[in-house]
Length: 188
Image (cartoon, rainbow, N blue to C red; front, side, top):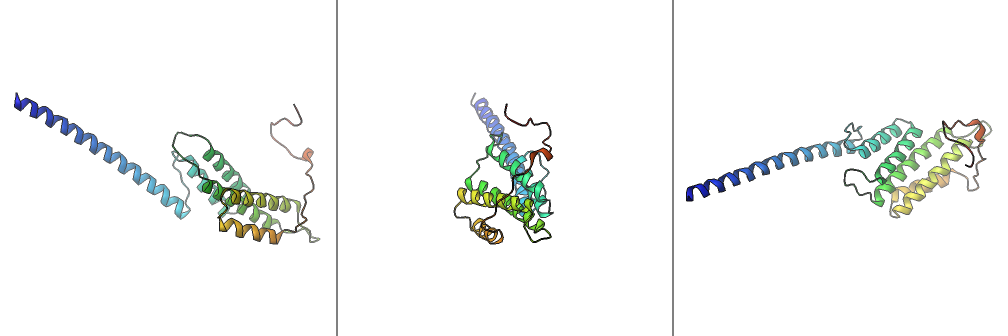
């Protein structure tokens, strides 16, 4: 009878050991996967893992900006901000610092987009550049609102304010020439 109780205890302990080994293997797999994602983010590579949609969108936006596709980069950073704000399956807390970094990156891409356009033949700032500058200013201000200690956002905002005239105003765009896919125009 005593031998039977010892066998039961041994079987239980072996079962617990197997569960612990399986758990350890799973955690090792997850740690390895996360470290690969972190390495890709740090090196600026594109992430192709679908289980991290925010990180994938962020890295794609970063690569778009790096390649000079500023409008696509701004669009992707905006989508990353939306993904970060949504409640998704993963427990992912979005800090104000992260949101600030996204707004900072949006501002950088808009600023660079405006610098690309520069001036017209008569020396005036193009309307598209004015719009980009004003949007970049708003993005930097939002970044500073979310993280007032962001020295990079402060520096880039001061650079931007040095580039654009203080009395900059944009002419309202004529919406009749713009195509807005299937969205209805006007009040309901």
